[in-house]
Image 1: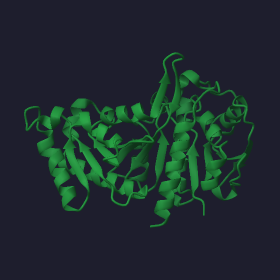
Image 2 (image 1 turned 90 degrees about the vertical axis):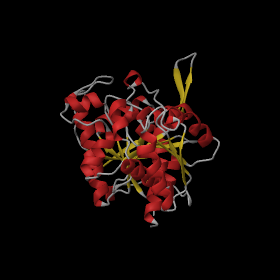
Image 3 (image 1 turned 180 degrees about the vertical axis):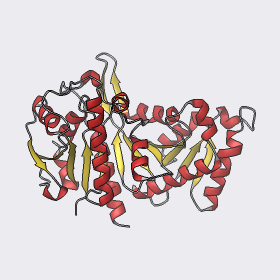
Amino acid sequence: MKPVIGITMGDPAGIGPEIAVKALARKEIYERSLPVIIGDLEAIKEANEFTGLHLTIHEIENVGQAKGEHGTLDLINLKMLAPGSWQYKQVSALAGKAAFSYIEKAIHLALQGAIQAVVTGPINKAALNLAGYHYAGHTEIFARLTGTKDYAMMLASKVMRVVHVTTHVSMREACDLITKDRVYTVIKLAYNAMKMLGIADPRIAVAGLNPHCSEDGLFGDEEAKGITPAIRKAKEEGINVEGPVPPDTVFVKALAGQYDVVVVMYHDQGHIPVKLTGFKLDAATNKFTSVSGVNCTLGLPIIRTSVDHGTAFGKAGEGRANEESLVDAINMAVQMARSRGQE
């Protein structure tokens, strides 16, 4: 049986509605899943028109009414938007409230078991805050609304995967959060995620924090106090994990195929290599020719994947957004849902 995948539309002022329509215009999505958009009719209708795809939009009240047919967009319409009530490229409380409502609905459906995974379109943090939702991003929303304590962000391009020990905090705070318990928890989350992706014996690398992994204490003690003890504990449990590996070489080794996933210590340590391998920019036109990559929240009671980019207000409403990352996110969600269904 095909897994039902709930796709949140994201901020209506951004490219979320457009990439949702473009992704679901692909026949292969329907061969492996039953996708349902959770959003607003007015935004999906506009995106359907300015992309020139002209797919059939099928409004439904519950997942059981979905047709799951290529050429038809099954939409749970939350009716947050009236015609002309929002503007592309503009931050607004209305758009922020709508985006949060789509996420909230999707989480509710996933916790009920009505859908087997949630795939999220991009949101705007400023719009969320204007609407009164003070979260650092999707990851924190999902953790809060599912009551999850131990969670982590995984980013994946087609050739590299990383899982973060810390994310949306300052560098100073990140250093304080790198403890034995936290690093060990993230190693375990990375291990379980690789198993869900079909890797029988995951090979995990743990990056150091300091230059040369602190050079035996010359450049810091985070490795000795937090990272190395966590690796030792994971090894004692039979996990195939190495490290700490110097950050300036661990990604070279991962690209060479030595590791299935790298546990990284802070936001940019993981984001930079993944985006270098997944995003391609044409310098002559200043346009991205590839926007590949997936953001996945690990540790939740539900499956959640997402695009690895923002709302791209600069091109919103123009029909030139790239849906590649959303397609990647849907494909990963399907793979994880099938794996969980076999447990």
